[in-house]
Length: 150
Image (tube, rainbow, N blue to C red; front, top):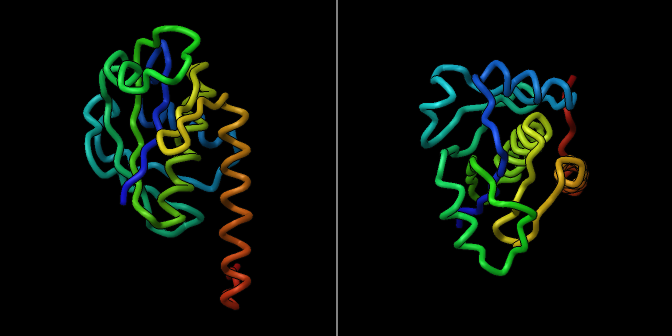
């Protein structure tokens, strides 16, 4: 089962390097692959989460169509752009998508729509989701007796 979050904004970042700068400004341990130009992103986008390979799918969609598809959501405005981040059932993919999405939303003064929850999030709220996901993952690792290595 795949899940999606959408980052709505009125402007796009100009490059993966600019997006990576936004990720770094949030102090996230995430590295986004810069092998493709930002404008050409479509499909799986490799990332490194805490030094391990992961990632999520990333696509540019028509913002109006996505907003119209969520008619029950009260958007504050008609956004010009949307970046879709899709991930499967793996917690690291979810964390990658939320880290990348939260940083992108803050850098573009946008918002994040959690498609599963049907809820709009401010960039700050999306960062809080990242923190909760990291705690959840750490708790699962502790239950399994897994230890993080230095």
